Length: 160
Image (cartoon, rainbow, N blue to C red; front, side, top):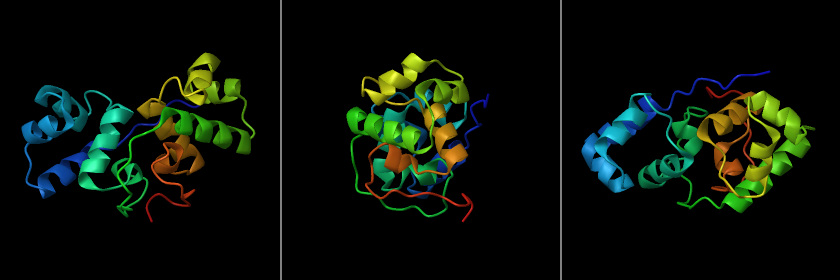
């Protein structure tokens, strides 16, 4: 069983915010959340949900892959809302390409099969830690899996 990998998006979010000269309060207002909630994301006290991660990426015109630290290139991606059905379809496609059953993927993510089934049916959007684990383990783009880009980006080395 593989446990969820530790994410390192907080430094990149802080950098993006300070490069624009924004306070946490200002960015929180843009995201329509309170400053305490944003502070928890930026300081790793709480995991940022995909919805807010997508909003941050859209606001700064960068890829989710960049914020998650999978690439140093910002990959300016067209601002998009996440379609849970498209994301579910891509997750299922990814799973089948990697010869994983829903049960096996669930074990990798330390969850249960019904959670994976709900993601694939588009009932729920994949949780940030699960997305991060899949992308880091299989070197596949979060932006692609979320439907933010149609380019099927894979990463050989996240540091390049």
